[in-house]
Amino acid sequence: MTDTSTSLGVRRATPSDAQPLVSVLAEAFFVGPVADWLIPDHRDRRLAYHRYFELVLDHGLAHGHVDTYADLSAVAIWYPRLTPPEPGSAEHQEALERATGAYAPKFALLEAMFEAYHPHDAHHYLAYVAVDPKQQRRGLGTRLLSGYHQQLDALGMPAYLEATNNRNRRLYQRLGYLPGPSMHLPTAGPEIWRMWRAPRGATVPDAFFAPPLPPRQSQ
Ligand SMILES: CC(C)(COP(=O)(O)OP(=O)(O)OC[C@H]1O[C@@H](n2cnc3c(N)ncnc32)[C@H](O)[C@@H]1OP(=O)(O)O)[C@@H](O)C(=O)NCCC(=O)NCCS
Image 1 (tube, protein in one colour):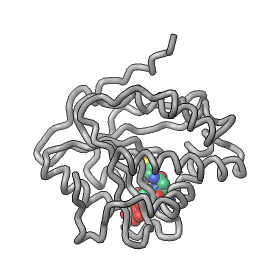
Image 2 (cartoon, protein in one colour):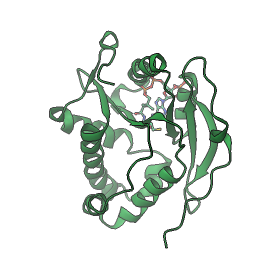
Image 3 (cartoon, protein in one colour):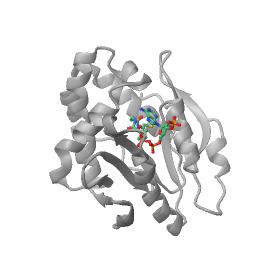
Image 4 (cartoon, helix red, strand yellow):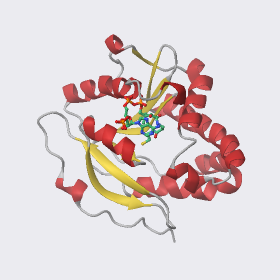
């Protein structure tokens, strides 16, 4: 998709927006059960999160669709997943290690779990959505996603995401997503809800509700 609903004040992000959008991502995701699980130490977390979200945003700008507002107060990173993605590259693993150091195995495990539980039907994947913490709960997140959903509905295309806490889950349910079987991050990590949004008039594929298999162990 090349166009976003400018009537909602949303525009496509460019590489020159990167620095402020990395800050929005790193600050918005700084608190929460997944952050506590990934990097318990707050000082380490701040450093690693900024580096990690640089990687995330660069990848989104190069391979996905990144939406924002003129004032860069929010960001959503989408990937069309019409066919299964290429397996993670050695370069990505090295970049992850440079960005997150000793925490790289946790990040790699999180990414591997998300991939292992990912549905196979064609869809657009909402990998990240974040609103500047000073501007949350004013409808910015809802508006940012609604424009994209309108375009998906016009294409008859479903959407998928992972919700990382109950409040997010409620937001996504209001936007038309249904929760499927959840996953738990090891060991005693938080619960993550897999959520699917069928385009208007369509049903959710049965396979989405089948209990997901545990991640495949590498040999
Ligand atoms: C989730 C998020 C993108 C929503 O954007 P927003 O502009 O704050 O949301 P809106 O004002 O459109 O809608 C409000 C709803 O969003 C959710 N929400 C708002 N702030 C939230 C926060 N800090 N954490 C989790 N959910 C939040 C709630 O469901 C809220 O409804 P409620 O007030 O009835 O609980 C934004 O709060 C955020 O960046 N949170 C931290 C990062 C994150 O969790 N991203 C999603 C990962 S799955």
